[in-house]
Image 1 (cartoon, rainbow, N blue to C red):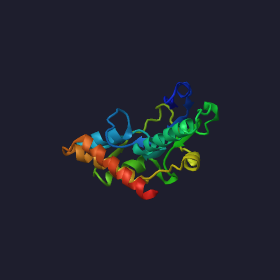
Image 2 (image 1 turned 90 degrees about the vertical axis):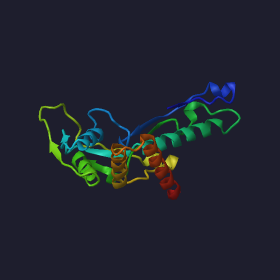
Image 3 (image 1 turned 120 degrees about the horizontal axis):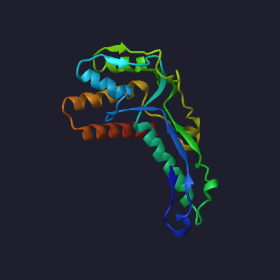
Image 4 (image 1 turned 60 degrees about the vertical axis):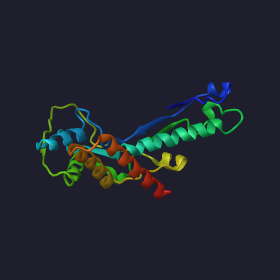
Length: 200
């Protein structure tokens, strides 16, 4: 993430750069191949069991709107520091020009199996274990430390695991039934913004 203020020639030459990392994002609108949620939704839509290649893998699941909100907060902080004085701060002096993680709360670290079983509470179906002992190695557990984003940016995740899964599956169910995908995205965004407003 790079910010190049353009309010003056001097500011245009200054760049404050930060890096940002998210957890395993899920949410409506993802139709990529070989991703657990899109694969699951496609299977459920045609009545097939959901194939699980690594049901025991533990991941930090979060709704895609969570890190996007964090990225915007980080960009705002970078910009504010760069433009708050007559002369912009040197990029290396910007306290936000560093690395940040925007992941979920610890309770959202769940296995692939738990994720799918939670999804099946909202869209009934079954899953099938397709583990392959000869498949390339995958980490058994991933986790992101988000303390820095919380303490320096005042950011924290808004939706818990249950809400994340419910909103995600509801998006796909609605689209499957003929709803406009953009309308569903806007409804998620509105719900997320409302939750964020109540959190402050």
